[in-house]
Length: 269
Image 1 (cartoon, rainbow, N blue to C red):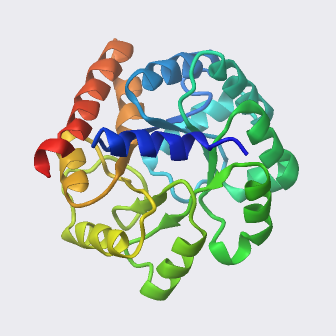
Image 2: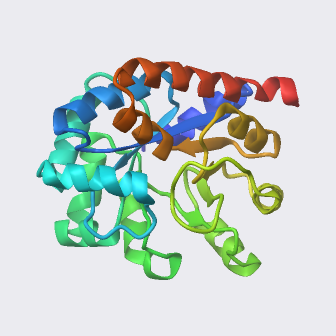
Protein backbone atom coordinates (compact mmCIF):
# COMPACT_ATOMS: atom_id res chain seq x y z
CA UNK A 1 0.00 0.00 0.00
CA UNK A 2 1.27 3.48 -0.89
CA UNK A 3 2.54 5.55 2.04
CA UNK A 4 -0.10 7.96 3.29
CA UNK A 5 0.83 11.59 2.54
CA UNK A 6 0.22 12.57 6.18
CA UNK A 7 2.83 10.10 7.44
CA UNK A 8 5.26 11.13 4.72
CA UNK A 9 4.89 14.83 5.54
CA UNK A 10 5.44 14.41 9.29
CA UNK A 11 8.56 12.33 8.58
CA UNK A 12 9.92 15.07 6.32
CA UNK A 13 9.20 17.75 8.90
CA UNK A 14 10.87 15.75 11.67
CA UNK A 15 13.99 15.32 9.54
CA UNK A 16 14.06 19.10 8.99
CA UNK A 17 13.32 19.75 12.67
CA UNK A 18 10.19 21.71 11.81
CA UNK A 19 6.67 21.72 13.15
CA UNK A 20 3.64 21.25 10.93
CA UNK A 21 1.48 24.18 9.94
CA UNK A 22 -1.99 22.71 9.42
CA UNK A 23 -4.53 25.12 7.98
CA UNK A 24 -8.32 24.80 7.87
CA UNK A 25 -10.75 26.31 5.39
CA UNK A 26 -14.46 25.86 4.74
CA UNK A 27 -15.23 24.57 1.25
CA UNK A 28 -17.73 26.78 -0.60
CA UNK A 29 -16.83 29.99 1.25
CA UNK A 30 -16.97 32.81 0.20
CA UNK A 31 -17.97 31.12 -3.06
CA UNK A 32 -17.33 27.65 -4.43
CA UNK A 33 -14.72 28.78 -6.96
CA UNK A 34 -13.10 31.26 -4.62
CA UNK A 35 -12.67 28.62 -1.91
CA UNK A 36 -10.63 26.61 -4.40
CA UNK A 37 -8.39 29.60 -5.14
CA UNK A 38 -7.92 30.29 -1.43
CA UNK A 39 -6.94 26.67 -0.76
CA UNK A 40 -4.35 26.97 -3.52
CA UNK A 41 -2.93 29.96 -1.61
CA UNK A 42 -2.96 27.98 1.65
CA UNK A 43 -1.02 25.16 -0.03
CA UNK A 44 1.88 27.54 -0.73
CA UNK A 45 2.84 27.84 2.95
CA UNK A 46 0.97 25.03 4.73
CA UNK A 47 2.14 21.50 5.43
CA UNK A 48 -1.33 19.92 5.63
CA UNK A 49 -4.79 21.32 4.93
CA UNK A 50 -8.11 20.50 6.60
CA UNK A 51 -11.05 20.97 4.26
CA UNK A 52 -14.33 21.61 6.02
CA UNK A 53 -17.43 20.02 4.51
CA UNK A 54 -20.25 22.39 5.53
CA UNK A 55 -22.90 20.96 7.83
CA UNK A 56 -26.09 22.69 8.96
CA UNK A 57 -25.77 21.76 12.66
CA UNK A 58 -22.12 22.02 13.72
CA UNK A 59 -21.30 21.46 17.37
CA UNK A 60 -17.56 22.18 17.50
CA UNK A 61 -17.35 25.19 15.21
CA UNK A 62 -17.38 28.68 16.72
CA UNK A 63 -19.10 31.82 15.36
CA UNK A 64 -16.51 32.59 12.67
CA UNK A 65 -16.55 29.15 11.06
CA UNK A 66 -20.31 28.85 11.54
CA UNK A 67 -20.75 32.05 9.54
CA UNK A 68 -18.53 30.66 6.78
CA UNK A 69 -20.55 27.42 6.81
CA UNK A 70 -23.83 29.36 6.51
CA UNK A 71 -22.49 31.24 3.49
CA UNK A 72 -21.21 28.03 1.90
CA UNK A 73 -24.60 26.33 2.35
CA UNK A 74 -26.32 29.34 0.79
CA UNK A 75 -23.95 28.83 -2.14
CA UNK A 76 -25.53 25.35 -2.52
CA UNK A 77 -22.33 23.45 -1.73
CA UNK A 78 -22.83 19.71 -1.22
CA UNK A 79 -20.69 16.65 -0.58
CA UNK A 80 -20.24 15.73 -4.24
CA UNK A 81 -19.10 19.29 -4.98
CA UNK A 82 -16.56 19.00 -2.16
CA UNK A 83 -15.15 15.83 -3.68
CA UNK A 84 -15.03 17.49 -7.11
CA UNK A 85 -13.14 20.47 -5.67
CA UNK A 86 -10.56 18.11 -4.17
CA UNK A 87 -10.15 16.38 -7.55
CA UNK A 88 -9.42 19.74 -9.16
CA UNK A 89 -7.02 20.78 -6.39
CA UNK A 90 -5.15 17.47 -6.66
CA UNK A 91 -4.08 18.43 -10.19
CA UNK A 92 -2.03 21.28 -8.72
CA UNK A 93 -0.76 20.08 -5.35
CA UNK A 94 0.35 16.94 -3.53
CA UNK A 95 -0.18 18.45 -0.06
CA UNK A 96 -1.94 16.14 2.44
CA UNK A 97 -5.69 16.84 2.59
CA UNK A 98 -7.98 16.01 5.52
CA UNK A 99 -11.76 16.24 5.40
CA UNK A 100 -13.27 17.71 8.56
CA UNK A 101 -16.97 17.03 8.90
CA UNK A 102 -19.77 15.44 10.94
CA UNK A 103 -21.01 11.86 10.90
CA UNK A 104 -24.41 12.70 9.45
CA UNK A 105 -22.72 13.85 6.23
CA UNK A 106 -20.80 10.58 5.96
CA UNK A 107 -23.80 8.42 6.90
CA UNK A 108 -26.15 10.06 4.42
CA UNK A 109 -23.59 9.76 1.64
CA UNK A 110 -22.93 6.11 2.46
CA UNK A 111 -20.02 5.31 4.77
CA UNK A 112 -18.03 3.01 2.47
CA UNK A 113 -18.88 5.10 -0.59
CA UNK A 114 -17.61 8.21 1.22
CA UNK A 115 -14.32 6.67 2.36
CA UNK A 116 -13.70 4.95 -0.98
CA UNK A 117 -14.21 8.26 -2.76
CA UNK A 118 -11.81 9.92 -0.32
CA UNK A 119 -9.18 7.44 -1.49
CA UNK A 120 -10.08 8.00 -5.16
CA UNK A 121 -9.81 11.82 -5.10
CA UNK A 122 -6.76 12.01 -2.83
CA UNK A 123 -8.07 12.70 0.66
CA UNK A 124 -5.51 11.38 3.15
CA UNK A 125 -7.45 11.65 6.40
CA UNK A 126 -10.89 12.30 7.81
CA UNK A 127 -11.80 14.04 11.03
CA UNK A 128 -15.38 13.28 12.04
CA UNK A 129 -15.96 15.61 14.96
CA UNK A 130 -18.93 13.83 16.53
CA UNK A 131 -17.91 10.19 16.04
CA UNK A 132 -16.24 8.85 19.20
CA UNK A 133 -13.91 5.86 19.31
CA UNK A 134 -16.59 3.68 20.89
CA UNK A 135 -18.82 4.03 17.81
CA UNK A 136 -16.16 4.25 15.10
CA UNK A 137 -15.35 0.55 14.61
CA UNK A 138 -16.76 0.12 11.10
CA UNK A 139 -15.37 3.45 9.95
CA UNK A 140 -11.91 2.57 11.26
CA UNK A 141 -11.93 -0.72 9.32
CA UNK A 142 -12.93 1.04 6.12
CA UNK A 143 -10.32 3.74 6.63
CA UNK A 144 -7.67 1.04 7.05
CA UNK A 145 -8.89 -0.68 3.87
CA UNK A 146 -8.70 2.52 1.80
CA UNK A 147 -5.53 4.04 3.32
CA UNK A 148 -7.41 7.01 4.79
CA UNK A 149 -6.32 7.96 8.30
CA UNK A 150 -9.06 8.52 10.88
CA UNK A 151 -7.89 11.53 12.90
CA UNK A 152 -8.94 11.49 16.54
CA UNK A 153 -9.75 14.57 18.60
CA UNK A 154 -8.91 14.64 22.30
CA UNK A 155 -9.94 17.28 24.81
CA UNK A 156 -8.22 18.70 27.88
CA UNK A 157 -10.57 16.68 30.07
CA UNK A 158 -10.16 13.39 28.21
CA UNK A 159 -9.27 11.09 31.09
CA UNK A 160 -6.10 9.03 31.12
CA UNK A 161 -7.56 5.58 30.40
CA UNK A 162 -9.62 6.79 27.46
CA UNK A 163 -6.73 8.80 26.04
CA UNK A 164 -4.44 5.79 26.16
CA UNK A 165 -7.12 3.72 24.40
CA UNK A 166 -7.46 6.35 21.65
CA UNK A 167 -3.69 6.38 21.20
CA UNK A 168 -3.82 2.65 20.41
CA UNK A 169 -6.02 3.38 17.39
CA UNK A 170 -4.69 6.79 16.31
CA UNK A 171 -3.21 7.21 12.82
CA UNK A 172 -1.67 10.20 11.08
CA UNK A 173 -1.71 12.58 14.02
CA UNK A 174 -3.66 13.25 17.18
CA UNK A 175 -5.62 16.52 17.34
CA UNK A 176 -5.59 18.14 20.77
CA UNK A 177 -8.32 20.70 21.44
CA UNK A 178 -6.51 23.50 23.25
CA UNK A 179 -9.51 25.05 25.00
CA UNK A 180 -12.87 24.12 26.44
CA UNK A 181 -15.57 25.26 24.04
CA UNK A 182 -15.68 25.84 20.31
CA UNK A 183 -13.26 27.04 17.66
CA UNK A 184 -12.21 30.68 17.47
CA UNK A 185 -9.11 32.85 17.71
CA UNK A 186 -7.91 33.52 21.25
CA UNK A 187 -5.11 35.47 22.88
CA UNK A 188 -4.06 33.38 25.88
CA UNK A 189 -2.55 29.91 26.05
CA UNK A 190 -3.59 27.77 29.02
CA UNK A 191 -0.98 25.99 31.15
CA UNK A 192 -3.36 23.01 31.24
CA UNK A 193 -2.92 22.67 27.47
CA UNK A 194 0.86 22.62 27.74
CA UNK A 195 0.67 19.97 30.46
CA UNK A 196 -1.59 17.84 28.26
CA UNK A 197 0.88 18.11 25.39
CA UNK A 198 3.68 16.87 27.64
CA UNK A 199 1.57 13.97 28.93
CA UNK A 200 0.57 12.80 25.44
CA UNK A 201 4.11 12.99 24.10
CA UNK A 202 5.32 10.98 27.08
CA UNK A 203 2.92 8.13 26.22
CA UNK A 204 2.95 8.12 22.42
CA UNK A 205 5.16 8.68 19.39
CA UNK A 206 2.28 9.69 17.13
CA UNK A 207 2.50 13.30 15.89
CA UNK A 208 0.45 15.70 18.00
CA UNK A 209 -1.21 18.81 16.59
CA UNK A 210 -2.85 21.50 18.71
CA UNK A 211 -5.90 23.38 17.44
CA UNK A 212 -8.65 25.77 18.55
CA UNK A 213 -7.56 29.30 19.42
CA UNK A 214 -4.28 29.44 17.48
CA UNK A 215 -4.09 32.95 16.03
CA UNK A 216 -0.49 34.21 15.94
CA UNK A 217 3.15 33.09 15.57
CA UNK A 218 3.75 33.29 19.33
CA UNK A 219 1.17 30.55 19.84
CA UNK A 220 2.96 28.37 17.29
CA UNK A 221 6.32 28.78 19.04
CA UNK A 222 4.84 28.11 22.49
CA UNK A 223 3.04 24.90 21.48
CA UNK A 224 5.98 23.51 19.52
CA UNK A 225 8.45 24.33 22.29
CA UNK A 226 6.20 22.39 24.68
CA UNK A 227 6.49 19.26 22.54
CA UNK A 228 3.68 19.48 19.98
CA UNK A 229 4.51 18.47 16.41
CA UNK A 230 2.13 20.90 14.73
CA UNK A 231 -0.60 23.49 15.09
CA UNK A 232 -3.98 23.89 13.41
CA UNK A 233 -5.28 27.33 12.46
CA UNK A 234 -8.64 28.05 10.85
CA UNK A 235 -10.85 30.74 12.35
CA UNK A 236 -8.18 33.44 11.97
CA UNK A 237 -7.82 32.62 8.27
CA UNK A 238 -11.56 32.84 7.69
CA UNK A 239 -11.63 36.06 9.67
CA UNK A 240 -9.04 37.55 7.30
CA UNK A 241 -11.15 36.58 4.28
CA UNK A 242 -14.24 38.12 5.87
CA UNK A 243 -12.65 41.39 6.95
CA UNK A 244 -9.68 42.19 4.69
CA UNK A 245 -10.27 43.80 1.31
CA UNK A 246 -7.04 42.39 -0.12
CA UNK A 247 -7.33 39.12 1.76
CA UNK A 248 -5.24 37.04 -0.63
CA UNK A 249 -2.18 39.22 -0.01
CA UNK A 250 -2.80 39.22 3.74
CA UNK A 251 -3.27 35.44 3.80
CA UNK A 252 0.08 34.94 2.09
CA UNK A 253 1.83 37.30 4.50
CA UNK A 254 0.23 35.76 7.58
CA UNK A 255 0.91 32.18 6.51
CA UNK A 256 4.57 33.01 5.89
CA UNK A 257 4.79 34.43 9.42
CA UNK A 258 3.24 31.27 10.86
CA UNK A 259 5.42 28.93 8.82
CA UNK A 260 8.53 30.84 9.87
CA UNK A 261 7.46 30.25 13.48
CA UNK A 262 7.43 26.47 12.91
CA UNK A 263 11.05 26.63 11.77
CA UNK A 264 11.99 28.32 15.05
CA UNK A 265 11.61 24.95 16.68
CA UNK A 266 15.22 24.13 15.72
CA UNK A 267 16.38 27.20 17.63
CA UNK A 268 14.33 26.47 20.74
CA UNK A 269 15.65 22.97 21.26
